Amino acid sequence: MTLHRDIPTLPAAPALGAKARPPAEAAAGGAVSGQPSESKVQGHIYGMDLMRFAAAMMVVLYHLGTYGAATPIFDPPVSERAFPALSQITWAGWVGVQVFFVISGFVISASLRQGSVSRFAGKRAVRILPTLWVCTTLALLIRLAWGEPVGDRVADWMRAFFLSPKGPYIDGVVWTLVVEAVFYVVIGTGVWLAGRLRIPRPVLLDWGALVLAVASAGFLTLYVLSAIEAPALHARLSWFGFKVVLLHHGVFFAAGMALSAIHRMGPTPLRNTTFRIAMIFGIGEIYAKADMGAASLYPLAIFLLMMVALHVSLTANQKIGALPLASHSPTLGLMSYPIYLCHFTLGMYLVPFLEPYVGNAALLMTVTLLATLTLAYLITRGPEPWLQARLRAVLLPRR
Image (cartoon, rainbow, N blue to C red; front, side, top):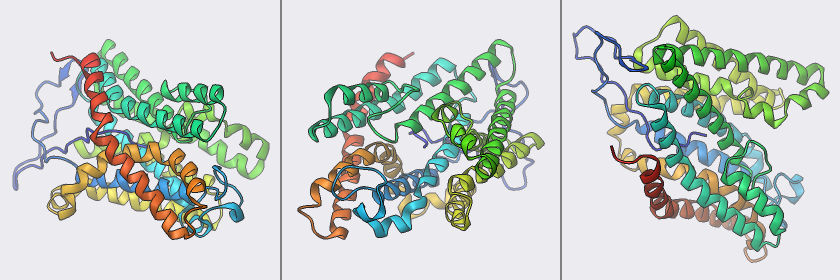
């Protein structure tokens, strides 16, 4: 899931009839000599906001279809679900997570092309931690109100609060933030080392994306083959630790990194190769997760359509910005993160709580969705910016 407010801007297109010049590629210590800067931009990428909101809602609807009707449980038998018909339609919504990872690779690669690594780390913390703290605390209060053991739930909350690489967590979606955080650490450390070794950042980011894509592709090859020939090994390869070290989802981050470089600085054989490897094996990961049957075409089609939407967002940004919906896209983009972080526990406990009082399934579904969206909106207008301002004062003091 991408978790970023600072959607990168696009480099301006050259004037009609002018000879295109390569944009600057910032080295570890500054811009490469003799190249123009990337100071001119086309503005906010509206389509990326809309994609993040769509991906968040895909995950929300997927989870909503799996909630129990009588007790707060995830993925019970169909006969025990509150909305069994919905689960038949939205079961592939989990692919929204892979979409988030691609967008994250795009955004982080762009944001690391200049500026200090320490400032990058500070900005990531300001973007991610306040909403994480608010939503995980709400999840803790909800689960304690249901009567769950205080000691166990507080331990789960602390692991989520500090993004521990080892679960369990108070909320079922926090694992994706742990994977995101590891990606930040890996890419940030690589850029820091590049500065020490005087390696230009674009070179490091291009080759780093390829290494990440190849490493993840190799793991996914074994993962898919084991699903066919060695179920016991496949079960071992499903261990959460392999997700934490980016082997399961590294191809999606790499695809975003390569796409960012292609759109900002133009295609090269290295960037094209990275993107193709990442996409091919990313499709393989989705295919394997969907049990490698005909039904796998459903999540694959959603993922590929979202990748087309990402391409359109980048190439037709000005036209999208002229649409009436574009004026609301920043708000939807802001809401996508708290929607993603709050929906799982809130919905899973709200549905069985309200079910005895709301006999109509469609009405219960509507109330749950409205509660999720309202809570997310309130978070973006209150505690989130308040906490961000105070954390920013500590981590990003004015120069």
